[in-house]
Amino acid sequence: VAQVKQETFADYDQLHYASVVKRMTLFVSNFSGLHVEAMKDSLYCDPASDPLRRANQYALYEALKLFACVLGPMVPHT
Image (tube, rainbow, N blue to C red):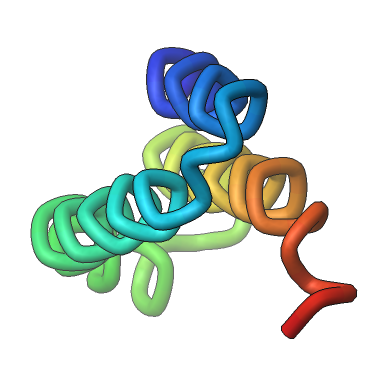
C-alpha cells in the first residue's frame, strides 16, 4: 500500500494521470482477486472479536484510505 501510494504521488507530481489510473486499476484488480476473495469467509463467518476477522477489516480499511487519498484529487474533475 505504501509503495503504491508513493508511486502514485510521484505520477501526480509529474502530471501523469493515466499512470495513476492504470496503477490503481491494477492494484484494485490484484487486491480484489487475491485478498478479498481469501478474506471473504472470515468476514462473513467469524465472530466480531476474532483476530483474523479484525486483521481483515484493518486491511480493507487501509485499502479504503489508499483509494480516498490517491483518487481524491481526481474526483472533482470526473
